Length: 187
Image (spheres, helix red, strand yellow):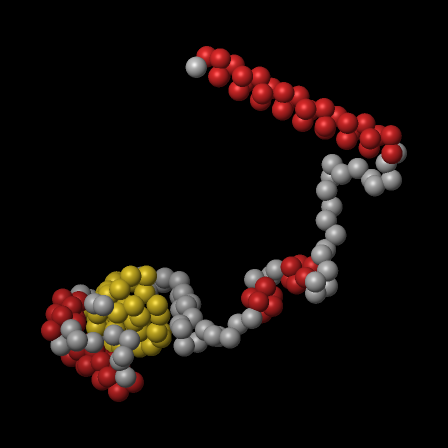
């Protein structure tokens, strides 16, 4: 019985296009010999790995979709282990449902723009408000605080508040002195 499979292969980062084409042809031949059919072979591109694999911090991902009998999976794993051991660092073969959703592949390092500026990043991530607030170039955006009183307060009120602040500072300084005196007496 024919089933649909995906084989995700992580290859060494130094793989050439010729080696990649040769690997694709070998895998295609393996599938057709088992009376299967290759549906697609995609080179996803070079990616930075989360952790080093065989001493490499980067790797090239390839995805092959094919239909074949279930007995081919063991043969393909052996093929990766024996014939492609110097090219394929890791591989994963999974059986997929025919009606499964199609997913989009991520952008590789080669496709990603290396010269992205801050404005582009903010626009792409819908943070345009930050751009407009910073467009004054050096001017600070006015800040609104809910608990702030208007500047036109009466001078008497301001003097009372200043006096209250100074009184609390004096009280706290006196409390500190009393605490220090009581600790020195206990010693």
